[in-house]
Image (tube, rainbow, N blue to C red; front, top):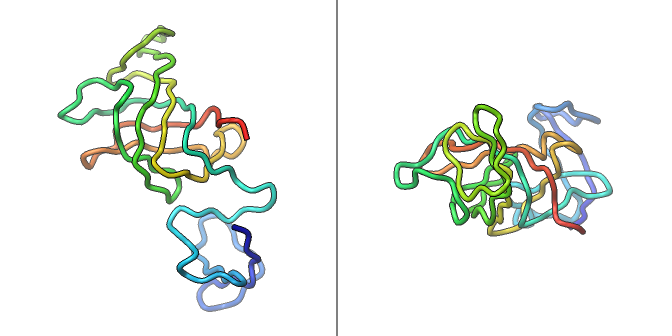
Length: 159
C-alpha cells in the first residue's frame, strides 16, 4: 500500500527529519492503526521488495537439541529488522567448512559452517539484498529460544 507521511514526531515535538536509531512517531495520511502490521517498512520509490523466497548465506552457530544437522526441510523463525515469520530451508546449494573447503553438492551442514541456501517464508517479508541495503539484507534464524544462524540475503527472485 502507498501512504503519504503527514507528520513526524519525537518526544511529543513535531520534527522535520530523524536519524537512524531514533524513536519517532510517524503519522500517515488516510491510514489507520489496523492497516499497519509489525514488520512493515517505510520507504521511498522504488519500494522495498516483498518476497516469500530468498537465496542467502548463513553462518550456523547452534542447532536445536532435536535436530543435530541443518538440511532441506529445516524449520525455524526468520527474524529480519522487525519481521518474524516461520520459514523452511528449501534447498542447500553449497557449504563451506571452518577450513574453507567448499562442497557444492552438500545435503546438510553442521555448526560452524557457512551455508548458501534457499529459504521460504510463510508470508512475504520486506527485504533487500545485503549488497543493496545492508539493514534490510540481514537476518537471524531462531528456534527453541536460541539463535541458530546469522545470515545475509544474496539474491531475491525476479520481479
